[in-house]
Picture 1 (spheres, rainbow, N blue to C red):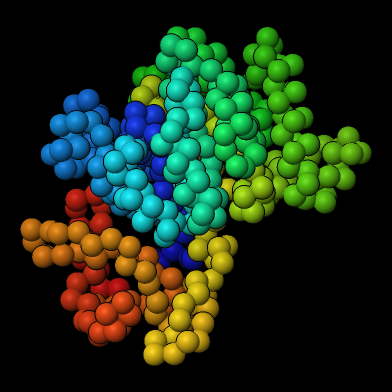
Picture 2 (cartoon, rainbow, N blue to C red; picture 1 turned 90 degrees about the horizontal axis):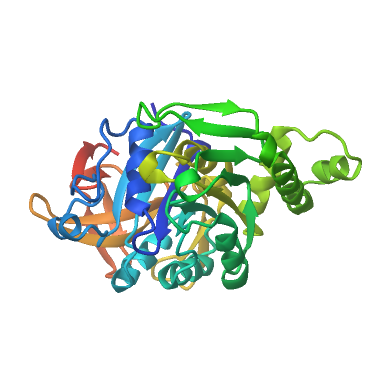
Length: 366
């Protein structure tokens, strides 16, 4: 069954090297049911780092794409390289994304490559969620990383969670929207978790953090602002709506936290992809020049529009010569269809259409 376009998310994951990006991606694929076993960077068994060089060195070299499903939403995910030597690979991916998850290490904070990629995302006006990973590491400091974000990044950070403990004492997170503590089950690879009351010792801190969040997002929703000023109860749906509006407008970016290697914090992150990042309908229509003219035309992301797509990557493949990775912006692409390659002003026939999952491929008719 085809997924409605408003329930599609085209996103990428970006980070400085060793922030835990591929480890987080592995958990996303596992919890969404895309794969049935969690891969390890150290063991060279990750799904998205499939090249021998990637597995040998434990780093992502080339952007890998996959698709997974969550809460009746279809998520197209690109895992991008974190090493500075492969910045161009990140750039070409950001150009076709509707939204992104920016990972930061809770110890290292805003590092050079994460700042570089952030500014690349600014150039394409990509809405983002931030995930502060490795909260279980020695020296982890959630609030120091937020201070670094405020000083070094261009968009306002908006914590929607705060951690329960840090380093060896990291236990879970407090959801500032629900005002509940989340704890993950250590016996089932973090597949289940429970909402509990906020620890009494953190109640005041959580209330202050929630008030700061509400105050910041109130500018995005008149109804919420009125309730806030009148000291009335504000519903969870109203809070989420205001966070979504501000995120899509790049007014601020929601901040979450966890420890992916210990399977803590990933489920709410997947929820946030659905809740706060845009569908193709919520980004500006693509603009292009009509071939053989100087006329600029917009294409809306609907099937009844003429076909248009951007080929953002060409890769060699042992079985099919070359694979062209495309972002479809409008219309429909079918197997056997003739399309115009505008860069060469040449018509070409689409021989095969493939749905890609890292280095695995499935044939599609359209």
